[in-house]
Image (cartoon, rainbow, N blue to C red; front, side):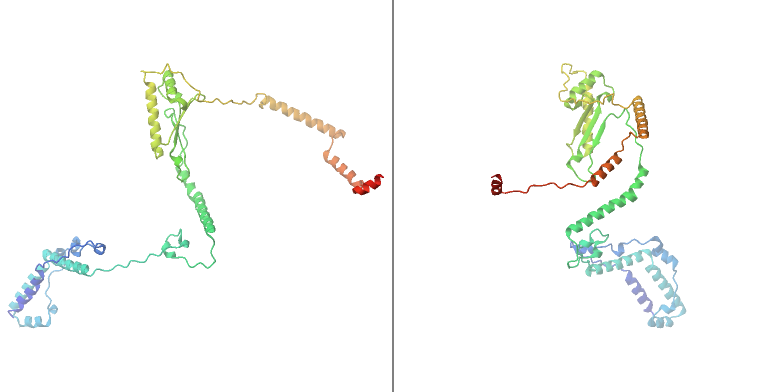
Length: 379
């Protein structure tokens, strides 16, 4: 009986002793990196499942039925005082084993053991074989479900026909976009507002509807010299001399373009900086280029053909034509009453009747004669 209690206590305390952890060196093999995961002993336990709360939720209670056959025999041989000491000792062992420190240590050792076992026998992941999709899987949401195409048995269309089908599908896709999605763009429409006097520069871009083109980056700038703010007449003339052949004297518009850079924004920024530089130089009064004459030889004046004033339909001209048309209509009605108006349809019908009634007269036609026959007739 004296040895029963120490044996139980030693068996419980032995489980709380620290165990040396055996760690395997980390390997850079892809398999270890693939199967590496967070060990169980490193997982944080939520507050509602901590050992301290479990201890408070489940108080200790001695249960005679939980003892095995040999422990029951030893427990039955104890006196009442020894039974009380046995229960107190078992309660102390239970409280020690369910304390937060011991519980955390046990969880860590169990997790480390499970982690080492998983490292020694890693689970092999089955990588599914990728099926190369065939022609009939093109454009499908999941090409793997379709799989490869079957053997050609002479029942398929040609590659040109497949190209026509693909083009037809693309046309139908754009038709659906135009029918269902483009009408919703009207919600984002904004009314056009003419640019004010504070925006004298006009930029023009070129787009090729989604296609890449080397000329797409080109930006063209146009502005009128009289629209630029805070420029005197002398400064404006100096600006015209600076721009040179880019100035149109008929429209008073300067036209410049740039395509040196890769994007439209960069070319636009370059043109804007160039205009700022030109305006700054035109306002510089140190040299106004008064000795340099204005040269417009680069511009070719095109003759403008004007419509004659006499040919224009004015109100008086329209009234005069209407009166002439009415007089002609009255004259035709009077001729029709007098029978002097010639009806072209009736005249054609009469001519046709006379031609059909006349019988054609046969005409004598001389048959062709040879050379010998012509000599005999001549004698």
